Length: 260
Image 1 (cartoon, rainbow, N blue to C red):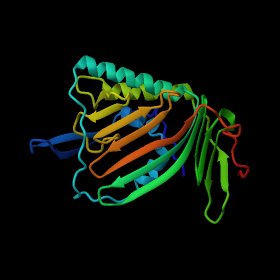
Image 2 (cartoon, rainbow, N blue to C red):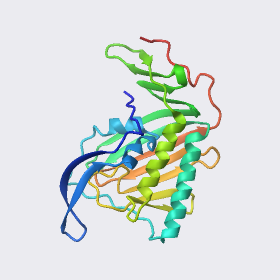
Image 3 (tube, rainbow, N blue to C red):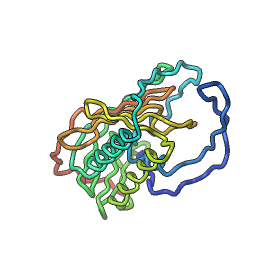
C-alpha cells in the first residue's frame, strides 16, 4: 500500500529525552522531536513507497557498523554553495518532466536484503507512482489510489485527494533549507566531481532520516533523481533509475478500470 505523508505538517515535539553515547564516550542527552525538515523527507525518497516496506526487515543492533565515506571538510562558503546547488537540483527534479524505472535494494548488516521495482512518471502538476500491487496517481480531480485486495488479482481504486503541487515543493525546499541552515546544520553538503551530492550527518540524532551519509545524483538530461543512497549502521538503502526518459506514455495518468 502506498502511504501518503503531508510534508507541510507542523513540527511535533515529543519532549522526551534519550541518552546517547558521543564519540568520546561521554553520555549526552538528546532531545527527541520531529523537525520540519525531517517531515519533508517524504519528498526525498524517489522510493518512498518501498522504504516503508523495507522497514519491515529486522536488523540486529549488535552487528558491525557499516564503514562510512565522509565528505571532505569544507568552509562555510563551500558548504553554502554546495547546499544551494543541491536545492537548485532538487527544485529542477520536482518540476521537470520525466519517466523513470527504479530499482530499490536494501542490504542489512545481518545479511537480509530486499529488492523491489517501481515506475515514477512526472508531468507537473501530475505524478504517478506504480508498483506491482499499488498505484498512486496525483492528477487534480482524477487523483486515485489503487491497491490489491486480499483474494483479488486486480487493483481496487478509490478517489484520492488532490494536492497543492507547488505548495508541496515549496515545503520540501523549506525543509531542506532548515536541514542545511543554522550555526549547526543537521546535515552538511558536499558536491563531488561527478556532480552528485553527499550529505553527512552533523549532529547527534537517534534516528537520522537520511542515515549517517546520504548520496544523491541527478540525471543531467532530464533533471530527474537518478540515484539515492542512505548509509546507516544497520543497513544501506540504494535506489537507482535503470531507465530515464523525457517521453511520457499516453496512459501514464490513467487509473486501472476497477474502482469502488
